[in-house]
Length: 198
Image (cartoon, rainbow, N blue to C red; front, side, top):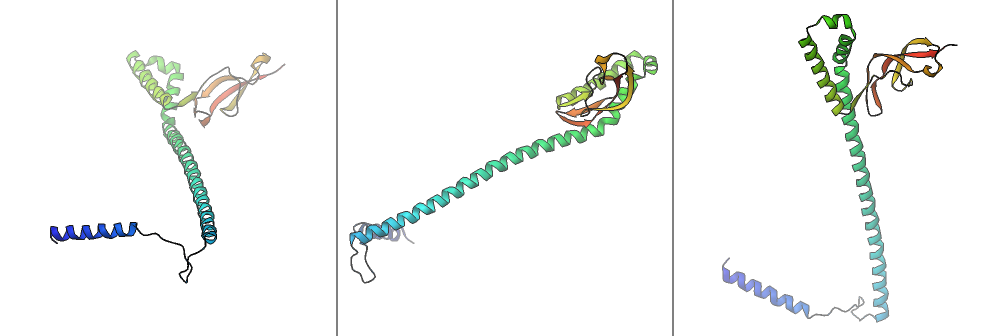
């Protein structure tokens, strides 16, 4: 197509469009008679009523979709947090045997003292780095003695009699360290507890 043909088509289209702008549409019956103003107004009111109803339906649908989206975002955020916690929990469960080995090595004072001091320092340093890494990931040790026995974080293995009533049902000694992420216990601490005897 030549540039001249394109120019002519464009001019023809613009002139036809201008012709349509001058036209005035009048509401009419099927026979072509002009509708009375009263009927036109009635018809327009009905159209407005229908359009308002549709608008409300669309608005309600949009608001519902928006609320569903917000709820979905919240659910996804919770799912991400839970996945993160479960992943950390699984990691710690796999590290528990190594952590327990460190704890047992430190508790066996007789053998620990026989090890070269440089080796002791190296092993202690490695253990501290491991514990620091866990702590930075939000994982805490449960290893306090002389605190109230709590069935949520402690597992009683042994009972030690005491004549001191203030020590009743407190942790005497931690036999195996426990671990938790926030309030979620990965493994309860195995402990011996005091029991008051008169």
